[in-house]
Length: 179
Image (cartoon, rainbow, N blue to C red; front, side):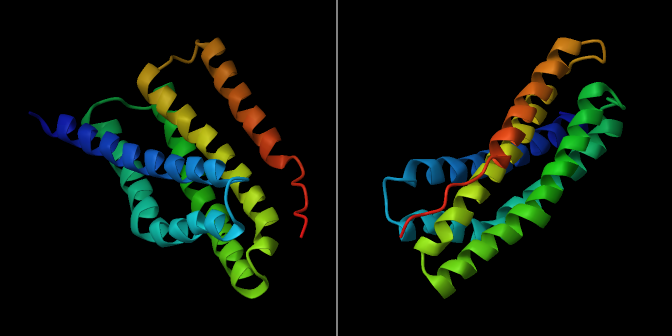
């Protein structure tokens, strides 16, 4: 087995853990919304705050670094799937680090200072933004698997439409929680 194959396995394994772990957190939030107490719903955010620096951030950095290394080791070069995938990974790693992470911490602090019910509206906003982020991550996975060429306009149009819908859904107003 050559180094490129081992590196590709490590890259895919890290991406599966990163994307799958975050997706599990999103699904847990969706399942708990409306079915459990505010405290229980916020337990997912507290778990995310614990996991992010220990799991999600290192996995995103490793996925990015191993992917860039594969560009050269595997000889893939700057094809559409590598260029757009790299842009997507940089976006989602930065979005998680600079937007979602601080929002998670803010929601936890709001719960601690004003109670769980006060944190529900910001939690819903956080969940929408996380879902938008995962639309980008799933687009990256799609690109990595299908490896479209620059002339595959329908593929890029479809990916762009899915991401645009996710952005619109994330930006719609969040209803205020009733106390």
